[in-house]
Image (cartoon, rainbow, N blue to C red; front, side, top):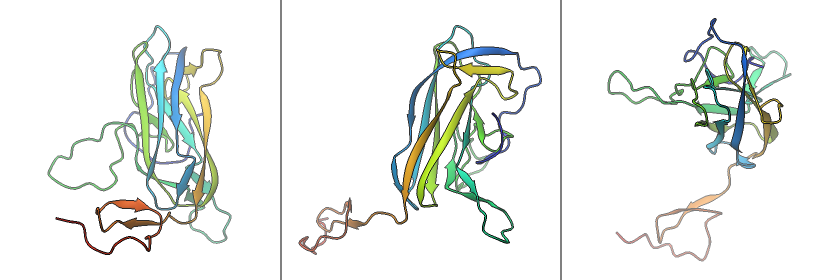
Length: 205
């Protein structure tokens, strides 16, 4: 299903000439850290292979659950993020002038707000979809993904057994980021609270 949620507009759009067909795919990897913490950046990745003998017209992935619908009264917008998408799949376009862009979207955005497309994929070729995100809502959440071979619903992606190319990745988001500290002896950022036994002497130049 290519519906609504998550981020995006622009990029690859609907193709009225999309050819009807079914294309076998293989999901080589689907990764999302099972343990996360609010405000700690992380990333989700999905690696897909064209398992057939024909070129996939426009490999696309739809996600849900990056957002949730809040029931809190009198909100102007009920849709609230679980993860903020800092950048989505696809090459980041070069800026026309020298500038510093904050949270570039990635070239795979589409007119669907929860779907990213990375174009045609040759037989047996592999493509990686990577989302860099920031968790902002504590709790246990599951992101469901669906792989498609096009944006119009005519070009379908199927696993080897004929099933839908779908799956889910669960993550626990802790309500606070873990403790870290700067080791004064090495200058490195380390996990855990500042240990009382560490010397307060600064790192050697």
